[in-house]
Length: 241
Image (cartoon, rainbow, N blue to C red; front, side, top):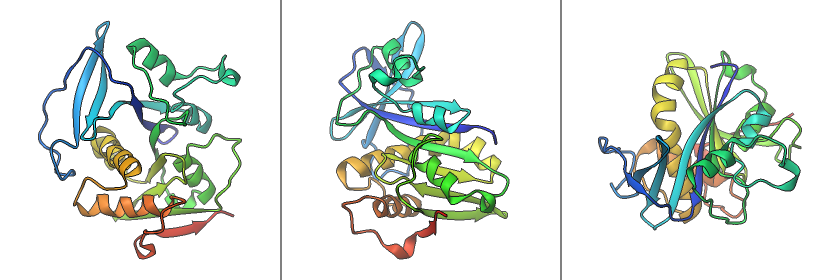
């Protein structure tokens, strides 16, 4: 896991066809109401694809990828194929074409993304690398914002840090805790936090009354260029050298 990046992806889509309700799971108390997101499946040639409908009537396609480099991570959320990438593998584009799921064009050619990386010692990871992860930047993308905004917690001496992207429709989790990454984050929090992020980004409100989501929303707000409501006492900053 420590040599890979995990990319949780959400694509706003046009109304799908042939969907059926996903298996009902226990209510996730992260959300303040049961109907914030209703999950469904689309089955094509024996393959299930995850879609969801929010309480404002917008549909989304959810999926995840394992990536071996920042360049691969960057391309993992490409939802349209521009001419300059005509010979490049775009897994998300191919996956949606196979599922006959059509992205909703909103002036962006990239999906919402929540990246995860694992490290033995977070203090040894340069801020520039953390920013690249949160912004889904490739290895050759220029650094525009010379700082990162983050919150973090510590459990049994292992740090987990949540880092906001800046106007990139993305954010990241960087952790020293492999148990959290494998058993909690990837099966649950990766998508749950992404749903919260998407809802907050689109509608300007957070569909949760829980403490951690509210800390995350304040962090996300701090990196929005037109949002001045974030509380600076509730997140930290680190300069990029």
